Length: 374
Ligand SMILES: NC(=O)c1ccc[n+]([C@@H]2O[C@H](COP(=O)([O-])OP(=O)(O)OC[C@H]3O[C@@H](n4cnc5c(N)ncnc54)[C@H](O)[C@@H]3O)[C@@H](O)[C@H]2O)c1
Ligand SMILES: [Zn+2]
Image (tube, rainbow, N blue to C red):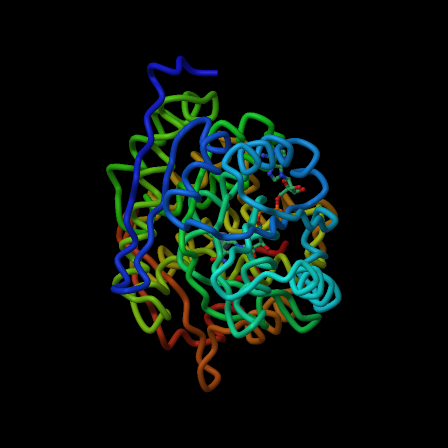
């Protein structure tokens, strides 16, 4: 634990007019959460949603903090893992929230990774046509990505995140200290989304990560700094384009390929979301180089960095990988980013220079993937 004297909290505002909200980033913030909620949202009752793993590690600290602030609360716990982003689990969580008599001005508080954030967030969007949501992300991925921006939802057997709603949180509290308990593989999966910010729009940040990723993985202060940089970038993108009509789509760099790989592996532990994104980002850079849009050296550099960190970077790195290009193309076509048969892909002119390509010919992607699946 860092010195208390050295503890700093960074506040980043997501500017959305009357629905603007703060992201608080720092160490030890779980302990302060009760006081923070009492100050910002006086009189609320709270339904905490978390998963079994997070509940075991961090729920008591949060409940203690709420208790000390005199905040009435209940805890709802779901099994850990992607399977919880299902209609069955949504029904249960919604019912538990209603049973706890959470009113529109009360709070659903998501304590967990992206799975809990998406599930609890969607539940909060539909219960009583929308109750307040507070996100307390506990994975690196959730801290830099899923807790900010208001995308909530569950999976369909037909694809990932196909059922959901935009529902912005009222507050995000990211306690970077809780990441100490993350298994390295899950930390790394989140790292892919951190690197993504550099690859999209901030070559300087990518260079910083190439130099500092070890310190960042080890902890304070580099980790907190990187989380703040990535969060600020996401907050600005969301403020500029809340419902993804334009620039927000850039955050999907690596995701169209990645979602197809996740679907092909059945959303299983064989491939975490962030790992799929790492492979997807490498594919996006390689495909851009293939089209003559970006220098091939940049694709090599991206692959080298992500591999050094410990992430998979090739389709063949996925345990038991045995997919055909056609299979992956079909899964990509079911993704949300298809308009009238043309694929929308995020491509790049080089590190830090991603752009939205709206009319990629599917045949060129198939041909590229045929090479990559072998
Ligand atoms: N809404 C969005 O904008 C958005 C963006 C990116 C990803 N997502 C979604 O996020 C999900 C992935 O999120 P994730 O990677 O956080 O997965 P996750 O929520 O499943 O968490 C990964 C694992 O880490 C455990 N865990 C969480 N916090 C921990 C901690 N502090 N210490 C120890 N273990 C901990 C969890 O129990 C789980 O087993 C996917 O479903 C993806 O679609 C959503
Ligand atoms: Zn993602």
